[in-house]
Image (cartoon, rainbow, N blue to C red; front, top):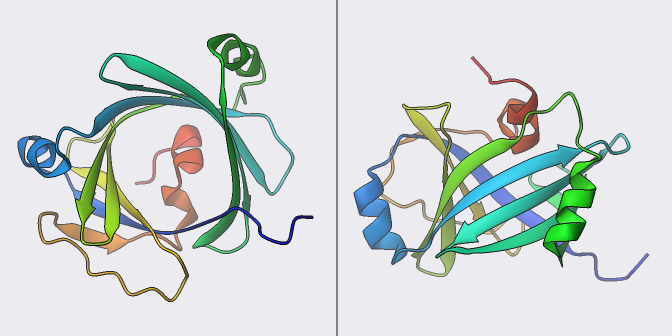
Amino acid sequence: MPSKLPLEIERKFLIAYPDTDLLDRLSGGNRSEISQTYLASEKGTSERVRARTKGGVTVYTHNTKIKLSSMKRIEMEDEVSEAEYKALLQRADPKCRTIEKVRYCVPVGEFVFEIDLFPFWKDKAFMEVEMPSEDTVVALPDFVEIIREVTDDDRYTNHALAKKLPE
């Protein structure tokens, strides 16, 4: 195993549905449409493919995550061709639906807050922020209304949403 693992350390928040005009301005138009499909994978591992379209250009990725804690995961992601993406879709997990979302990337200070809007929610959304370490202090932006932090709530992962929407 490599000595420096590719780690993703993030906090996640359930937020009230934000003002999309404000998000467009704050993100500088950094908005993309995402379609992600979870693949059948071994227990303890989450594997997905994603088509991310921004400015008319679509990029395809294959991602594997291994959970270390509620906040920290080993994450491996590779860009793939459209043909590889379509081939990987053949391994789609039949227990999961494809997740469609619009993502805004909003820079605030040294962090970028990713805000995901889903078509199945009209009153709430997700906000995530990646950090260099688990003890990093992050000042949350005042342009969103935070309902609650859901970093430790497994019902609010994208993989869980692909299976069932929480009440």
